[in-house]
Image (cartoon, rainbow, N blue to C red):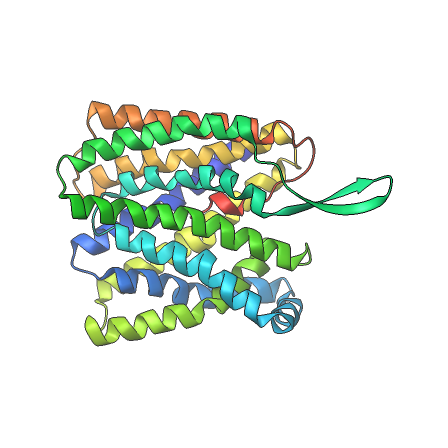
Length: 325
């Protein structure tokens, strides 16, 4: 029960990503600064955490050994993830983006055949492509139906261009995040913990954020004090606090498949928290009945997908990073 409570609490802190990005856009802040400031602010906090744990040297040695892979896949996993997510916040409410973001679970299943696993046979060990979890993928259709219901409701009040800009970037982000993270996990080969990978990818993605910040400085000027403060809150809540809580919750499951599935399923609460926070914080109207049904379907699909995805995993621990915004 404690792991479940920690998972729900982490989902609450993750939700600030969606709500505050929307708040910054409504107050006139540029998505460029919302994206770049989060990762720039994360660097000192993550450096301090990894340094206190005594793991900096090991991380820097690995990054020096394969800089091209770190730069490339960090750009995919972080740059093509958070930039489009912030861009989409200019065209849709946080709860809609949070709901659409759940497509990342489907994306994770579709990406499985692009990765290999070691199989032991009588002749020795050989590499083979991983099998797509068909049963889990079928459960993912429930998520797509729920997202479709929410988008249909929102599309009625948006122009075709605005609806396109609010949906397509989130889909790009939903595929880029698990792809970049899984590639980096493969490159790390189990030699780095989650905090080291997070710091390494943040540092390797800095060229992207510095270039984006330079572009924002030229085109938008300096960010307001309010946007800088809200970006700091996002960096702390989502980048540091939520991640730490989520990793703690998954560690408590000790790799037990059903317990881990239950913890991961708590992240579907982001959609509910986004609805409530936007209603209280931004005075946003509550979703219609159709959209509420869509939200419930997304949450149900998340739970079912998580259960069926891990039902064959036994005691093998599963990396949770692909579901963290």
